[in-house]
Image (cartoon, rainbow, N blue to C red; front, top):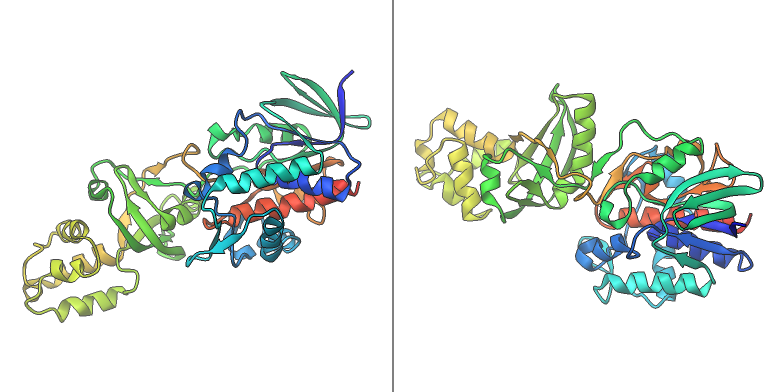
Length: 411
């Protein structure tokens, strides 16, 4: 006879752990089991924020997210907001601190603090975690669900699907959750692709020769019509493969999405984000005997200043008043609106989150219960919701995990 539980949570990442804690707190009498295929629990929590775990952001609203409708996302976020998140972790003994960017980290600067507290909270509600325990299939049967894997079969009245998406597959999120969701009647968005991911350029592009250079810059996606679609300004890192850093990660999903619908969409970069093309043009005209290189070097590393001049076919040390009109215009374009010939991205292996998944339109947002399969709940990254960098994706995990956990606990 198969082992039986009241609630089986498939996936013990951020959303799954949170769902387990709140299911147990809501109804301590229920038998809750979390199953995770990874050998090591909480891999994404441990690598987040450079190993410090960016738990959330001081201000979180639906505008930081893409995927399903922002109104739908808002309904879930407001059920468990940032002040509740801060209070929850404080109760677990994890104090959070706010950094200048608005990101909230544990005061220990150690992601283990967060993971250990969550695992302790799971134990406190007498929920069980079994791992590595990879699930192959979930079937709807009389009285609930049959969950099958290499380690055997389990039956449960309710299932919470918290398997994640496809980002960082070595953590266990290899997309198998989508197969399970489909088998239970759900659809997956037509496009599932890496988000918060570094972008690649041709290996002979001059940016690849500037590996290690970091500078605040504005990245902007424009449609083939020239219409400006979205822009982000933040730290930008030149690498041997192309570009990374916060601005690049934030804009990557919007660039990829734009290219699906409009192959002529282009990514532009402004290396002087505080200046418009008109201001840079006026600056160059006013330089007199000062060289363009000296002007640029005041704002950026020497290697980049020299490279931009060379890219615009301008001798770096020539006095600015000797530039032809065409040379000056070329330099202005190179500095403030350089088109980047993006060849792709670094894929799910290097992506921090997945764009796409189960549409929120297929989920009751008050409970996170499936509209197509009663007794099934979904939370976290398996949903078609992806946020910017800065703790937003964790906040979605906490909020959606809370709603799913409390709701299944009240069943």
